[in-house]
Length: 312
Length: 255
Image (cartoon, rainbow over all chains, first blue to last red; front, side, top):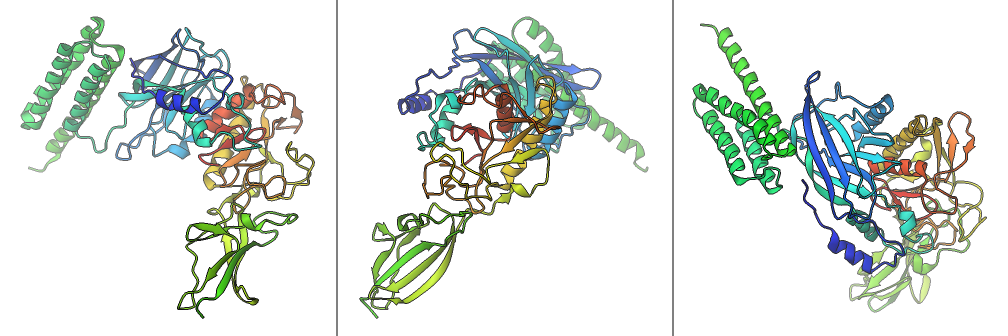
């Protein structure tokens, strides 16, 4: 459930210019399966990740990062009620948050495995890292974060244990390894892929535009093999297109539009059980469709209230 | 007067730019270079044109920041001259030493150097904690997070205080730790306010006592121990990355 973004070319280039006696860590494949659940008590989203260092890799996982950046045009999220593993992690989050307040979707870290830490970063990522018992090849770890926002497709980065002090000669006596070259290697040894993370949703909310976003999730899920057949993708595309058409027509057809979206939610359960949708595609379709339905119902209530209070 | 031979030279103003040393003096070839027709030198000899003017194509500033005196004079009579001041510097930096706190210590501004290239040399850069505002902001949070983490079970249960060694000089430029105007020995980085050195030791916040173990697996090793790695995590969160220069060096998006 990931797509490798290769840095092999730059890695080879850099290695050819260095005489490094030790072998650099290499991740040929890292699995990161995502599940999303709604926390009933708070209506927040719990994002769970099963990260596995494949047996064929030569590095140990030190960090797992997920993109949580947000567009400036999106809703300003708040941090009220976000759960944290302990008061220290919450303090750490609160110290970091002012640096990125307008640039990220805030996330909480409710549970951490032993020896794992989590934080937000100025590179606009959620960062999990271990100080001991790091996943060796063949081992994995389960990680969780919480957000108030539904899922979207996000980049993840897995960083291996890589102590620059052990790999590069001291620059004290000569500027032996240019910084740019060292940074390039540091980047090249990371593994990049795709997973789920909280979405950055544009403000003001426009339901028809959001339905286009859900359609794009269908297409991308097919590409990422999160939707396993073209027929399944076509079914969801047709339902969303129909909802969109009805929504764009007269207000009397809003009900039909909502019914089509309800059909999406009804279908994701059996399709997921049948293996036609992975946990990622299931979460994208279900929670984003639920989000747009909630918004449509809120709009309906507002319209109704306006009608009731209008003077005759 | 046309066809006259004119020389122009750049001289470092002693003790400027945070360099409290002038022996040896900064060599002319490191005090900036004047370029004309593709070749650079200091001083540069030019010939006036029909309007009596001599113009250089460009001037490459010294890698040493500070005040410079630019002098143009007649080759045949050096008393016929004019001068202009030139300040070579990076954009304004913030003095980290102005922050009054007990959450971290500042070192490297007095006493003798420990750098192996010139051990026990008197330190002659006493104002050594200048950085960009962005780095200063980030460092404060990193150090407070590290201090707090030390107090957790994972961190060993003692609030930890770190000592910050050299950053940059007030006007940036080469930080010649040996006070010999070396451009790439000692601190080859530390030029633009984006570098910070951390002493390889942890101190108990309450008592100030140095705790055994430091931040590395062994004092002679380049490898971090778990405290060093945790510090690295917090530095990374803020865009600070380790660089193998000096005992423990982090750079924030530059050098």
